[in-house]
Amino acid sequence: MENLLWRNSKWGSKLVAMAIACVALVWVAIPFLWAFNNSIKTEADTFRQGAVIPFLQFTPSLDAWKFVLSDPQALNCLFSSALVGVGTTLFVLILGTPAAYSLARFEFKRMKSRDITLWFLSQRVLPPVVVLTPFYILLAELGLIDTWLGLILLYSTFNLAFCVVIMRDIFRDVSKEVEEAARIEGASLWQIFWMIAVPLSLDGLIVTAFIVFAFCWNEALFASAVTSQHAATMPAFILASRSTRGVDFNQAAVNTLVAIAPPVIMSFFVQRYLARGLSFGAVKG
Amino acid sequence: MAVIASAQSKAERGFKYALLAPAVIWVIGLTFFPIVAAVHFSFVNYVLGEGITGFVGFDNYVRVLTDGGFWYSIFITLVYVLVTVPIEVCAGFVLAWIITIGLPGKSFFRPILTAPLFTMEVAIGYLGVTLFTDQGGLVTTLLAAVGIHIEWLSTGAGGLAAAMILDMWIWTPFVFLMSLAGLSAIPNDIYDAAMLEASSHWEVFRHVALPLAWPVLTIAILLRIIEGMKSFGLPYALTSGGPGTSTQLFSIMADLTTIQFTDFGRGSAMGVLYLILVSVVITIFFKQMRKRIE
Image 1 (cartoon, rainbow over the protein chains, first blue to last red):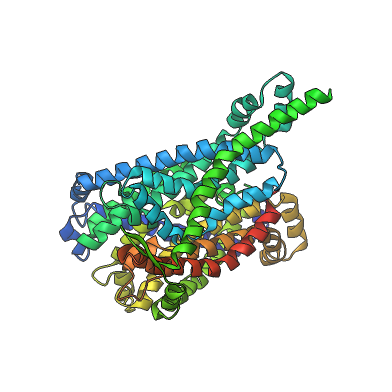
Image 2 (cartoon, each protein chain N blue to C red):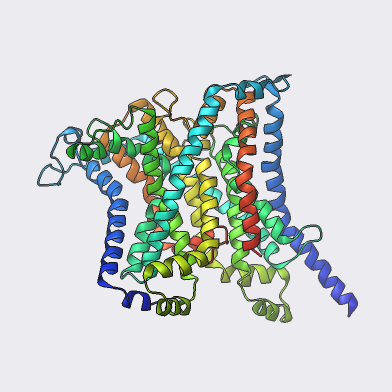
């Protein structure tokens, strides 16, 4: 694209394009900068007018960071978030990847594999609040309220569709000739799946893992409904501290930065296939 | 020969079902059972610890449908979606177009402009309090400096507006990312040819880029509507549903009914009614998806 459209542009339209891009950049950056700037203020400085530029107008302090990161409840929630996120991701990949492969390669008697795939997708687009009651009661009956296992169970259910739909799409791109050649060499169906298709689809697995992890990390409705102390994740922690402690600017800023950092940082490394993954394979790219 | 072929296809049949079955069983057990259960619970009285204490017919539905709070929450959820989605779609698509036509620094802009998409909604809502509060919030202070005074978090309309602004911050990147993929999929020759024919960028945008990227944009719009109808964490963290119940979007209200007031019968009835409402959008979405995936 490098690029007739751009080269033939008039100076005016180039300037407008650049201006829009810069506005977008500032718009995206403001909450991050505001949070960062507040996170290094003392509580008194957060209320003082004119305390904007660190070192010049106020003395940076790590008090809020120290406070939040030494709060056992916050650390506990970070740990729960990580554990539930990783646990769900692994479980979803183990359960979903074989199903995705099966749907990518084979047809079935009663239903087209495309329709089975869409059937999987239906549970992802369902508003979760619809099944809040039955899931709450199910977990209560099983004694899984406020446990990591309970959350992993719930999140696996909501995210299985991601894995099945995305990985099916990726597997369809793996060349059939390679698999055919392996079959002639005497590889079993399982070997073809495990030793050829899966290694060739690593990019897709990584993107799937990232999307599933980010969803679990950020999920709030069930996290706040079915956890209280032990298994509370970061969203539940933030909602709870909002209602009990109110809002201290500097602590809110640290909480925010800690809570959003993992998926945001990961996203910088997972750019390929992102649109494809988030659109369930409907958008290539 | 036929014997070998049939042995092979038999192995294949076992294999394909073995791979698929665990996931299918999981979904039937943990998706279809809960939906059936939700419908069931909506017709009974359920007390935590005691279980079902009686069949009440349509009582739960009557109580929900005659409750002004239910209709209000549906109304503001629809307003929320109808305001945020069109703005997000326009802004996201225009940004994607600007990057596509060759603005220098594409690989710099893309990851940064998509970063908000992966932030935690609850955290952004919480941070939003410090942006919109009238006690030294950034937005409030900046607007006051130019003489504009808006009561963001102390009024229902202001709270909703603040939530919508933050919603746009998080979700415009989604449309941007989708549109970028859609526009990049259009071959360069088409752009080049169009540029030679057309008299302005606007014409290429209007008559080439938009129609060719439209199928992708349709999927993005439908997914945004579906996700928007689920909005919970961001508005809840920002306003806690208040003042009063003025910013209780549907998911917030249903969550409070079910979990805080443990009114499971009414909560289920709300869920079922909402499912019927949302199924219109979901049906359209599935029709589009059927065309897009093979």
